[in-house]
Length: 262
Length: 262
Figure: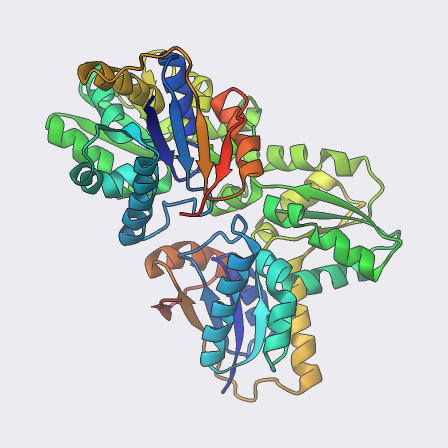
């Protein structure tokens, strides 16, 4: 039984795995986190591409039926190259996220929240305007959100204050939808929604990506036929460190973690 | 005229360079930041050692008269190896920081604040107890402090709230001194002092390291004779990114930045 291969530079992509597992309970997932080399965001484009292709090759060796790129940096720098090289379907967080955003917006005025690396890559505004030349895109770098989530401060007053600080400019704009363009941000959804007020819709790229996975599996007739899914986790760094934070991200116990060299 | 070689995995070590330049205005500094491979904290010990020795070899090729290891992770994993390999004096943030801490404490009850990597390495308690078996050491991991500083939120209410959260347990302890064992933390000194109250002395490893540099230069008769110091900066990643954050850390303009391959 073939599985869905999901990969990221670290633990963040587990929010995609989590939503895939919830949405498609019969599917098996093979997750790869390149935790020894995380973060990719500050590496040069050639290095990111090389690392991404090493991840792809590893997952292909595990006989997956689909690749899910659960990492904004990899999607920004290696998307075309990966599409050109593999013959199985590929789904990515950027592509899925912006499709959802463009479906949801009514006034074509949208905002993207992401890490500094994602925002400074300019990939979202470029791709959004390519698909909808009328769109107006506000880009907000929110670098403190990732450490806030990893440190478990999501419910803390600190998260609220930071969200208010980052999002103040959006509150007074006339955007109607915001995309959480980082796999860590779904944990801050409530705080972000509160800071933005009721009139702005918030959607997350991880959820959008999981829905896209379901659509593509159906389209290609690749759905699981068995009812006994098996999830496996591979990391290039420490398994115990991955397990600790990973279980919070996945929302359940992680049992099969294997350390590999990439 | 030979310079003082200072190195770190990123920009943090510039707080050491800053204090060296302030304390020793005639000395020239050659700084190396391995910004392409930062952070070292999540790498395995062999990799950290290999990267550290590459940094050392680069600085030796620049004809420095002294090596300053301005990075806690490198000190924790490569200190002995570097001491064994080079013939010029070596000063490090850990060694300098804990010497100062042990000089200042009156009741032998101290605390260390550091990143998760530094705290989980256990290096400070081990080295402190080796030098003073009576010492009682509290270790506090404060992972949000680095992103708070890099994001420029040092004066924000957020920094105060985070400091209160991390330091609550120390306030009710009977420690009399705290070492800021991360090169980013000097920027949060005021907030940390406020959260700890007046009875606890706060000292930072960057300042301790600069004083140690001055002492060793004098001891070895290596002080600069010229009055026209020249500072040079080398990075393995992007020069422009380094300059942007680096000028805040150094507290002055950075002009000579050269990108190198390590």
